[in-house]
Image (cartoon, rainbow, N blue to C red; front, side, top):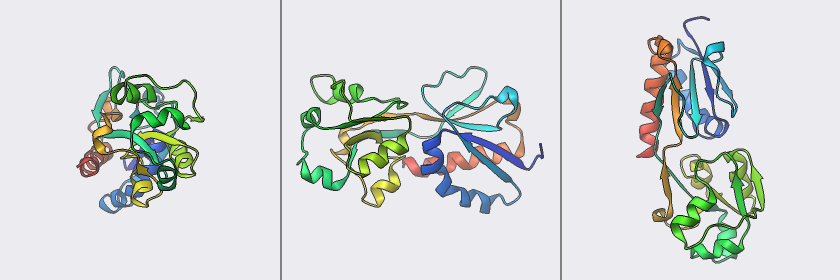
Length: 208
């Protein structure tokens, strides 16, 4: 395609909650680049020429591709302020009795969190399950239960006081879950270089 067109594919939640609010800054910095953004759970197929760059979520086993972590995220229980007040939440054991929201694709799951911060694994029953972080966050915001999500992805929910961490930051699990991924042959394309440089710069501000 046109050398000034850039096709970026992304995992859905980071696309809508993290990338979209920042894209205007990229457009202002690089008015010469026409950006196309698509979002889906399935990674793009570079062989089919579906994208120039992919922002992927998960455990990185993508051979023959350049894989660069975006930022370290803190994954922790999040709930609406009224839910936290209503249940007087102060210790992790209380969560065994409350509705938990499961995010099926998350690299950190409730059993991981319970194993680290309590003396037993989590219950096998979840109030609701979703296939993306954004839905889990919205459900928690609506008072359906407690989500276990990244405070980076939930940043706007937290800033707007729609959600808050149930416990202190010390009860978070740190993880690198999002990666910028692209084939070696794309590395020298000016639009790809510009986007990769920009996205790392913005990510560095996010995690500080």
